[in-house]
Image 1 (tube, rainbow, N blue to C red):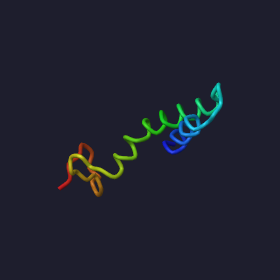
Image 2: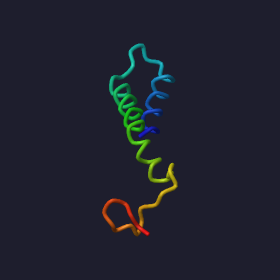
Image 3: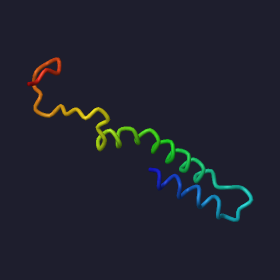
Image 4: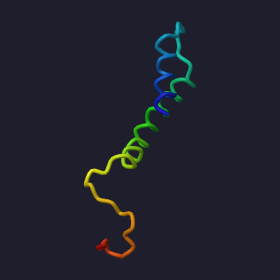
Length: 65
């Protein structure tokens, strides 16, 4: 998503038109916005800030041990 948004803005910046195409503006805005929304979930899957693992923990309430 970020690549799509940034690519759209690059095309807008390098274009020689007097009035930029509206489609590129919308695609760029939605691509960058979507990437910012998805980023926390993508990082949460790879980073564990508290060092806790919930794998193998079948007891309700989080007790396992």
